[in-house]
Length: 121
Length: 106
Image (cartoon, rainbow over all chains, first blue to last red; front, side, top):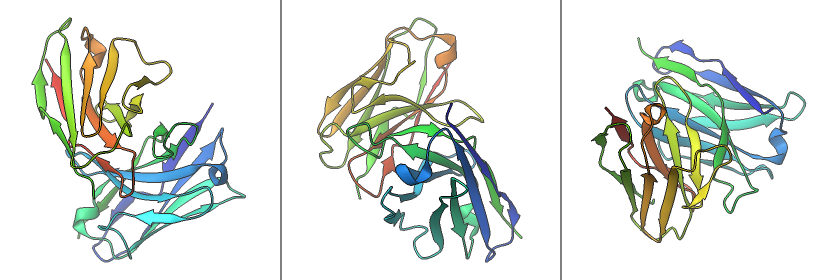
């Protein structure tokens, strides 16, 4: 059974940093496209970042230069390092797997339960 | 960036109703369109991929159609567990974009 478990969320002051983790079981992070999607309170889904199986990374313009996606092969874990946080980064952050067995690797079939990040003074 | 526009933003319906949700892309995305269902406090769940392919385990009352710029999600006979918010997502290119969501409520 595939399981994704996000941790690391919490209350952080504007300008601060936070690192989210997504511990994965049942699949190998390095063999898959892995992504972060966020959802501000009461709002819709917003894609944040993706890392390809080959290691290439891409970001939404809203986080480019502030967030960094990475992975640890030995821990089978995905990360999102978030720096210079702003109030508008407040959201539930989900990790998900992009299934390259489909026509597009940007089809997200397995999701974690999410972790809440609140940026406020 | 490809903009995804869903309509309606909310839909009142009753059990047994046929419900149709539309999604329009700002440019052609061929059939690279996915639909997700999200219930309050839960992660999104993949329903339909590649515009019309049913994800495993998803009831057959859900169906998708369309290509190019115009897409439709149809629930043939709404069940109590279907009251949720539905999102389309283009899987054609980065930045990956979602529609604004359609809340199906009683």
